[in-house]
Image (cartoon, rainbow, N blue to C red):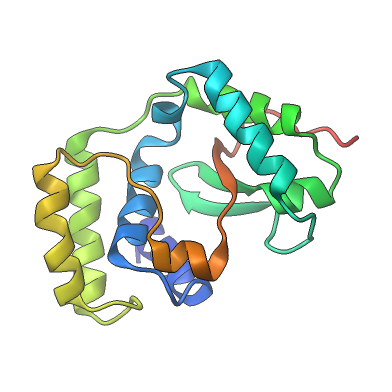
Length: 172
């Protein structure tokens, strides 16, 4: 089993309300990381600070959640609970965004693996649901997408994608 398949299965188990859009988001983040989010540093910093301020400090989810390809999701609620400042999270995020991995061909190969897992009923949505979602996504040029409304309502995601080896977070 590939690293991506392991990650997708783990996320399917952890997030049973995951929709095709959420799985595609995960695959996109696995391929491209987070660079697309830092076009405007001041705006990205302000957005993170607002999101961090609203996060309820809690030890769960874990601070880091692997998404493969050397990336992880750094959860803001866990960071806050562990005394990691918003400034430190942003610095780690900004350092990670400097890395520009990925290519459209790599994303398409990973989407094909996603489709195989859906056909094997290894994901919380049907292969048909994914097959309905993917043509429109591909026609739009495979952009970064937000989490689905279903996923947001169930899990209130608040994280930043960071490179696993991109600096050490300091505690307050």
